Image (tube, rainbow, N blue to C red; front, side, top):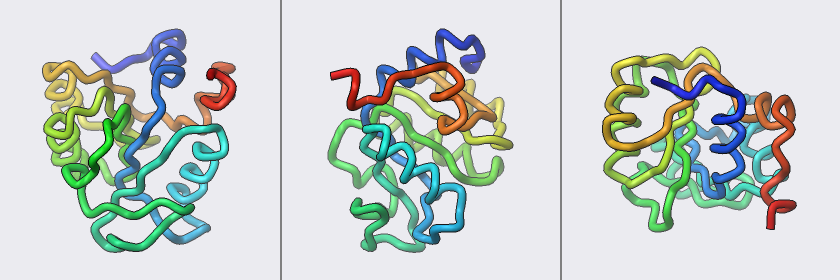
Length: 145
């Protein structure tokens, strides 16, 4: 069952350092671009994943084609995609050894969430970290030491 309790979501956000953002955009007006910039400002390392702009850079980070290419441990996979695409991303997150999957506002896939949880990943669904971090009073990563 996806995390719904505020203290569980706050703990997950405090424990997270590296986020792979699938569906990251290089367009400044897109929500994924703004959320990525905000998370970086809060001290998270955000690795953009988008096959359409692979090899480019967004907010100073190289854009990866898929999760399997990333050679650093991934704490969270943030899914900025339509719900019908999230199942494949969850499967990649499991194979990549991610610790959690975060499905953005409006992104819901109960079957994918169940697969992730069965593989030991924590899941947050239909929420945005840019909203949850200030709402829950989570300290920025940089302030956590």
